Length: 215
Image 1: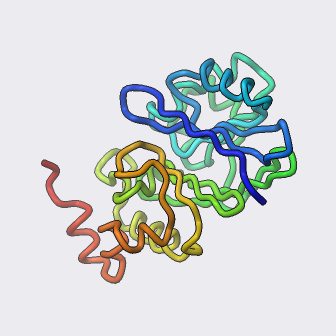
Image 2 (image 1 turned 30 degrees about the horizontal axis):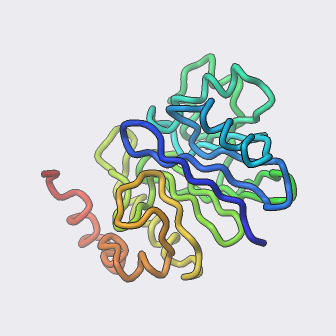
């Protein structure tokens, strides 16, 4: 099934926010609603679409700062992995649907599956829809997420990236930040060019490379 995907670059940290849905449907999910929720929802409306779900890749501020506005507007169902839910404000936690690895959500006729990829945070999640993977802060174009922040775990990141690398090569990768040389990649391209993918044959090598001193 071809996908409707609109990639929006928002905020001072080069975040990518995504609108995702089936091409023939109005129902749309927003992934990592942050920085300019009104602008993102207006973009969906311009495309003749209605946002019904808000999916979050993890709890860091630059990805969830639009969550209070999503809740205030009503009519949009927010979902966060259960392992990251405790990191949200208590008043927000009560209104968010927690999910677990392998859970899926129906957005119109499109099924979006949660692919739990801990390492950046305990609840870090990529989202699979058709032949696309929305990588959050797990996998970027040419890089992967940091593991030296609170809740980060480089050994979990190693295992998560191994699983991501085993997806079909034609899987399109939509990263959570504009950090690479292209805004959209593929699993095949990352296997070839991403230095973190090239360290996946050895946990020791991966840990040494991922946790090297930051310049």
